[in-house]
Every structure is written in C-alpha cells, then in structure tokens.
Amino acid sequence: MELNKLTIEQAGEGIRKKDFSSVELVSACRDAIARRDGTIHAYLEVFDDALTEARARDKEIAAYGGDARRAMPPLFGIPIAIKDNILIQGKLCTAGSRMLADYTASYDATVIARLKKQGAIFLGRTNMDEFAMGSSTENSAFGPTKNPHDPGRVPGGSSGGSAAAVAADMCLGALGSDTGGSIRQPAAFCGIVGMKPTYGGVSRHGVIPMAASLYQIGPMARTVADTEILFHAIAGQDPHDAVSMEITNHNPPAGGHTTSAGLKGVRVGLPREYFGTGLSPAVEQAIRSAIKVMEDAGAVVREISLPHASLALPTYYIVVPSEVSADLARFDGIRYGGIRNKELGIRNLYDIYAQTRAAGFGPEVKRRIMLGVYALSAGYYDAYYVKAQKVRTLIKEDFENAFEDVDVIAGPTTPTPAFRIGERRSNPLEMYLADIYTVAVNLAGLPALSLPAGFTEQEGSRLPVGLHLIAPRRADQRLFDIARAVEALLLAR
Ligand code: GLN
Image 1 (cartoon, rainbow, N blue to C red):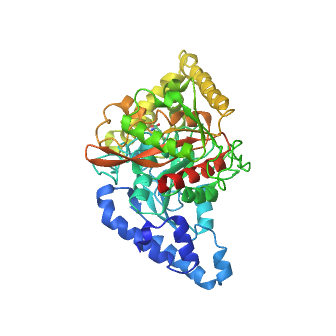
Image 2: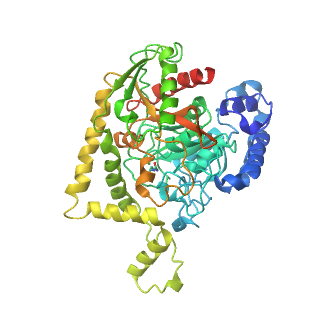
C-alpha cells in the first residue's frame, strides 16, 4: 500500500486503528517528494521537522486506549502542504516574492493554529504566483511549478504548488487562497477538489494579503470529503479577522436532499453566459456529460441567466489592483523587504521605497500597483473604482436572483484545460481569461468548489476538467453535500 496515495479519511482511520503510524505516512509523502518534486517543483521548502512532529503524534497515539483513539480529530497525524502566503511561526514565508525572500513568520496564522490544534503535520511551503497574482504559478520569483499530468503545462495558479502537490500524491491535502479563482482553477487544471468558502467563513489573520475584500483561505484535496474535513478544521469566527463569522446555518437545499437521497429534486442552474464563446468544446463536452449524470440521478437542471457575467472580469481587474495598491504599500523596504541594496546608491527615504519596490516586485505585481494607483487617483476614482463597485453590486444581485429558483449553479471552472508553460506569459489579458468563470464568485462573496469531471485529450496529453459548483452565501455545507453526491455519481459512471 502506498500510504501517500490514501485519502485523508482513509489515512485518519488507519492512524486511529494503528494500522500504520504518522511517521510512515509522512515518510511516504517525503519519498514521493524526493521522487517527483525535482520535476514538478510544487514545494519551495520541505520541512525537516515534519518527521519529528509525526514521531510526537505517534507517541501520543500510543499512550491512548482504543476509545480515546477513535475520538481523535480527523487530521491527527495527517501530512498537509501550506501555500506560502500563510504564516507558520518560525518558518520562512515568501508569498512567492523576492520582496519577502528572507522573511520569517513570527506567529501562526489562525488557520495554522487551528490545524496544529487538530494535530495536523505540515510537510512544507508550496509555490505560488507572486503575492497570489496569476493563474499559472509562472509569476513566482522562485521558478514555475509543473502540472503533474503533463510537465510541459502549467498547474494553474496562484495556488499551483498546493494543487500539484496534492495531485502528485506529495501530500494528502493542502491549503490555498482564492481571490479570483486561485484555489478552484489550479484544482481544475490538476484534477483535484478545491473549495473557496463564503467570504468571512475562514479567518485570514496571518495571511499575506492581496485584495482584502475578495480573498479566502480554503482546502484542496483529492476528494470532496477530504476538503470538507479540512474546511471544518479551519472555518469559524476569529476575533483577529473582523469580517470572519461562524457559518452555522447549514442551508440545506430547498429543492431536495443530498446525502440520503442523492441529487433527487436538487435544482441546478446552468448560466447560459458560462457556455458561450471562449469555452473550449472539449471542456464543454465533459461538463455537459457530468451534468447529464446529475440529471439522470434526479437533479432538476435548467438554464438560467447571470446578465452581468461579462462584466465580472473587467470589474475584478479594477477592484483588485485598487486594493493591491493599498495592501502592498507596507512593502516599503523598512518594515519588510530589508534594505539589501546599499550598492544601489540609496541616498534618502524615497530611494529606499523606489529601489526596494523596483527590485523586490515582479512585473505582474508592478502592473497591478500602477493600475490600482491610477484607478484610485483624483479624477479617475469615480470613473473606475466607484463604477466598478456599482457593477460589483449588480453581479451580486444576479446571483441572488438566480438563487431564488435554484439550489446550486453549475458550469465549467475554466474555459480551457491546462495551457502550456510560457504560452500566456507575455499576454496578461489571456492569462486573466483563465479566471473568467471564477472571479464573479469572489466579487459576490459566495462559496464555490471545483471537482474533477473527467479528462480531455489535448495534443497527446490527458488533461483534467473541473466542474464548478456555486452556492448561496453561507450555504457551504450544501455545497459539500451536493459535491459529494456528484463526485460519487461521476466515479460510478
Ligand atoms: N488569477 C487571478 C488573479 O491573478 C486570481 C488570483 C487569486 O485568486 N489569488 O488575480
């Protein structure tokens, strides 16, 4: 048995029954990393203390009797990977940027503290687009990550390292962050499950911010049930994040049940705007066939409309750069980023800012800061930022109207399967299009999930396709229930 290939559910059970130890589990993952990560480069760092931690867990388990063991948290002794914008005390945390290349976290993010409390083990830090800006992980200052299904292709981004680590069995699950699709899009490209919680459902305390009104931390794993386990471990109100809240209302679907009755009566809306130009025929075919499976199982599928869907991407790319220009102002060479550039001839305070930011940020980050400063500047503020906020409200209302008639919205996560490394690097607009179906969800603050919906043949490669499910605000549990039922049906076909 290859332990690194187990689901979190299976591994947890094995540990609790003492079929194998946490040390064996962690070692299996580390062996997989040694074998595969030279090619894939999912990890920026593999933590040596993971084995020490595992040994400590095993000792604890040995001290328990059977009943106490059975009652242990589901993540006890389970090795997971962490996107490198989430602080783990005492570890480097770079956000994929030269700016933070030697920054060591002085405290644990709330999500990390919660995982530690459950007894989870951190295998290492995963690669990402710089400050989570990108859709391919090529914007990392530390080199790109490769897609485990085809190393000539990108794993998606910005949580590409986490997605690739899960897909290549180099961990059992991972955390990512999603501002416009960064959990769901790489999950789709790598053939795994990725979930973006309701805005506020998970604390962002101790996460290096990108665009504060949009991003969420969320789980990535090989099955829906595993993402659910991770979600419940990290979710909930936190006094350190003012927008965080308890998602206590489970919001079961009004149209039907899911866990006991499968999808019978669940009302599924297909936005006509998500099946138009730009959608690759191969992806559309895979999605339509997955939806047919849902329909055959009793789901009530109907076409719906999100009339402002085409405005989501332009709105996102006003709101995000505006927030980025403010959120990244702290990287000034004094508080962060160190004054490494004596040889650059720094003479005064302005030089420190300018030289540090010129040397520390990559091109995409600079592009966004400049766009944001422009959109927020006097004379343009109303025309761009205020207008974008108004359109954001219309987008939110589109979803609210749609959810009066359906329990869940379904469509493709991405318009194409994983593209080739280098293919879109020089064309930001094409890169942005990778998130055309995912950004509206962040603008509206909704929970959404991508799950594997089959494969498409692309020039000799077999590439995964992701099915995107979107639920109303705070209906995160409904999303998991429906996704679990869909996953079971798709696996059984
Ligand atoms: N690709 C999108 C962007 O570049 C989304 C990034 C994210 O969700 N962090 O903004």
